[in-house]
Length: 304
Image 1 (tube, rainbow, N blue to C red):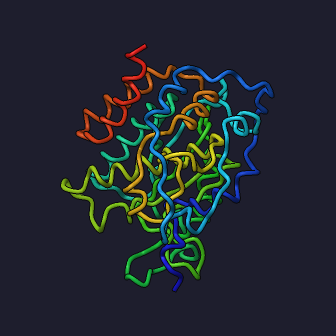
Image 2: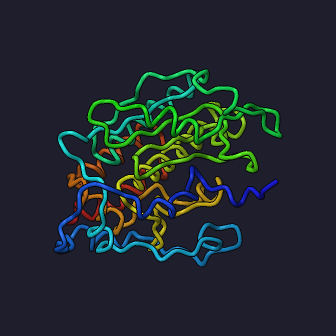
């Protein structure tokens, strides 16, 4: 059986493969001057430590992506025709899981400052027996590629700019691998992830916030890739690659100053509104550490 360390959170293994495939509008060649906000919040960036064995960058050394490289790249840009992020639940979810999906929807709308909608769930029955199996641990798994290519790519809701499927069941990418957290096609702006392993066996009131934070980090990371942002090697950032749940748990939920600048150049939202929206979300949901992180960037704006 392959070592689990080669499984990365929600298909981070596909990130490098899809870098060259991002499509749509070509950004202007002239690089805009860096706004004072992005210069000022650099003080809140936390330098990444030297990678240790098992860390993403230890086994996947990367060159990173400068703002200039991002700005000159081809990546999706919201338009009147493509401006809504969609979530597609797959399976039968209990009340706690439904609450998490609702909160992920709310969070993504604040994170990207774009309208986000959750579509009606579909049954696991859409997956034929040929794309199912029992894991060595004794639970059912679905073939991630089938969900991606035969189900989600066929979903074309109005004004879709990105679509993320959320499966309640565990996923596997191919017969020789034991599981994968997810799979994505950044070219097609579609991805699927499983909440199964985020829940530490069972989602409860006690582990609700830990599991929610994992979902928030993962969904914003993957959709960030759909907007053309590569893995970050500049600082502790939600766009860092991760090799495991433990590495994801150690990483921040914040976009570093460089990645904030990338996203803002693409979507052109109000930085203060975005930070305030995120801080209010964290406070309402008792995510104290995450709220404190947002307050550091908010303080930069208030001091001006």
